[in-house]
Length: 267
Image 1 (cartoon, rainbow, N blue to C red):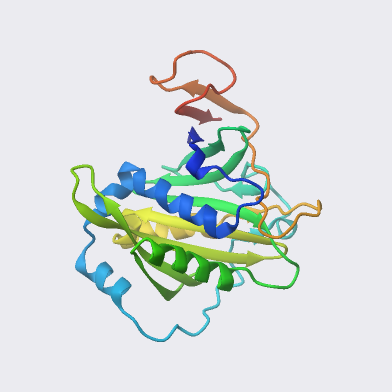
Image 2 (cartoon, rainbow, N blue to C red):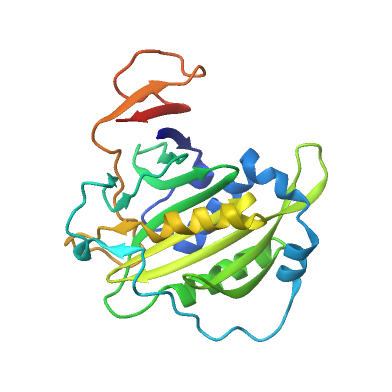
């Protein structure tokens, strides 16, 4: 199990007053900039056609109540999970985790799960006791992507209705294309989990299932502290993580993570 820690530039910093829509816009830009997503600049025709399809919105899709993401109060034994504060993540072979850190405060604002050539970014927010956030949030995401010249379509998925998006992107060689992303929103008891899936999982059924299976094992620990809706729930580095700076890090052998790309070995 490998951990990577990455400081976020100002464009992707999460401020308390930011809305989830603004964080989604920052997340889509971040995913676009990663090599795993740049290969999607020219997506296969079947995915492109699906995103271009217009029509009535699908009927509300419901996720299986017997699978996750789970609420922390429903899971008694947390010993098999990586404890990241508001998120508990089940380790699986080949899984790498990237912590996305707000540079000005050094707080963790997102966790990215990487397997194979796929990546899933997770952010978790406080939510009202009764109202669902995803219907309104998905509309905000679609509007933001449309303003960039992209396209979106709401489609039924394993975790309910999700947003399939084509976001304009300039490839490293200067060609204009797009990146294909899946935006998923899960409403829980007083929490909202947002996932963005990119990379090979958009076209490879096996990688798509691996990402979805990882998402289905996530546990959200809301906590009892009152928080306004859409405020980020606190994420932390798991206890027992052994930090080893990458070659790009300037100071080897430090116990605490230094600024810049880092790798953390768990166990």
